[in-house]
Length: 462
Image (cartoon, rainbow, N blue to C red; front, side, top):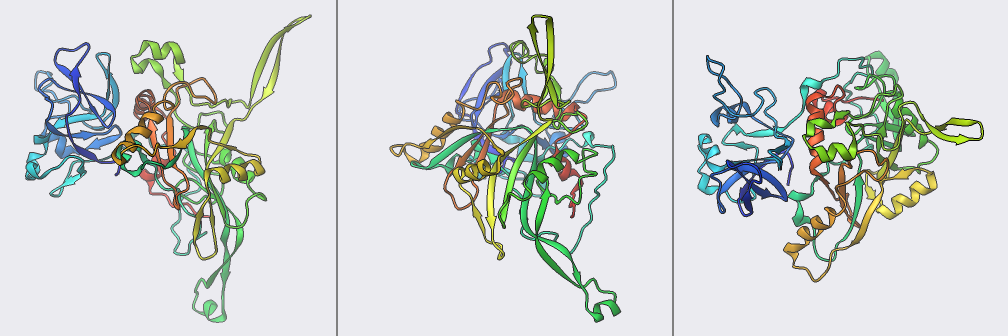
C-alpha cells in the first residue's frame, strides 16, 4: 500500500475530545485524529495521512480552504488555500494526525459511494484528482546550483541502483506473518547517499566511420567508484541543491578502496554541511504548542546526532589554575549505513542480510544505523494479528530522545523483514517528529533533499 493516497476507512474507535465540545477523537491506522462531532461508530469515510496535499477541486467542492466574504469574515474552511496540506498538529490539547472526512465528500466525482470498500486507496476517482504527495515548492532553493542535470542516452553506471522507497508500516501490516524474523532500527533524519564499486562509463570507442559521420561511438565501461543521492548520480561535488555537495564528498571517498567489486552501500548522512549549516531544517519547538515537549527538548530542534557545525566541541572543567576549555574534535557530519547489495555484471542483485551488512561495515570501519530490537514474531499468533503485534513492538522504540545525539526527539524506526530476497522494510514515525516535519516544510530555508529532487526531476550525471 502506498503512503501517498487516502484510504476508505470505517470509524471503529471513537472517544470524546478532552477539551472541546464540538470535536471527537477517532483512531485510524493507529493514529488519533480529531473529527467532527457528528461522526459515529460504523461511519464510512476517507482518511488522508499526514504529508498529503488535497487537490484544488476537492477542496473547492468541500469548502475546505480559508476564504473571506466582502466583510472579511471567514466563509470557508481551515486549510491554507495554496498549500492544502494535511498536517500533524495538536487541536485543543489533543493529538491529531491526518484528516478524516465523511464518505459523501467524494460524491461530486460521480462515484457510487456504495461501491467503495474499507481499505480502498484513493488518489484519483473518475478522472478527478483527490490528493497527491505534498512537496513544499515554496522552499525551493535559490542559491548556487552547480552540477546541473544533463540527460544522457548512455547510462553512466547502468548497475548503480536507486534505493527503493520505504513505505509506512501502518499501511502494510499484512506483510508480516507469524514466525518472521524482524529487525527494528533507528530511523535517522538526514539525506540519503549511495556509493558503489561498479562498471562506470569511461569514454567512447570511435571507429573511422564514427568520426566521418560525427557519431559518439560505442561506450566502454570499467570498474570504478560512483556516488549519488537517492535518485541522482553525482557528476562532482561542486554544486548540488544545497549549493555545495562538499559534505558528501568526504563520505563518498571513505569507501574508495574498501568496497568489493559489485558492492553498493546505502547510507544516511546526518549533521551539518561543511559551512556549518544543518543538513536538515531547524525548527522552533514553541510551534508545537506543547510545553512538556519544549521543557524536554529546549526552544529549538536541530537534528545534530552528536555532530557539531564547527567540527569541534569544548570540554570545560577546573584544574589547579582555574577553569579550562579544551577543544574536542567531532564530525561535522556522519554516515550511517542501512543497506548493502552485491550486483554481478549481468545485473543480478543479491541483498546483504543486516548481519552481513554490519560485518562488512565493521571491516570498513563505518557506522550502521542502531539496532533497537531483533526477534521473531510469535508463531502462535493468527496471521491477521502478526502485523498489529509488530506495530505494537515498534511503538516501544519509535518515540523519545534520539539515542545517538540525545538532544532532539528521534524520527522513528524502520521495521525490516530479515532474510528476504529483496529489501523489505517499513518506516514508523512518531507524532512529535511528524509535527516538527510539517513545521519545517512550511518555514525552513533548507528543504528535504529527496523532495527537492522530486521538484526538479533531476538526473545528475558523472
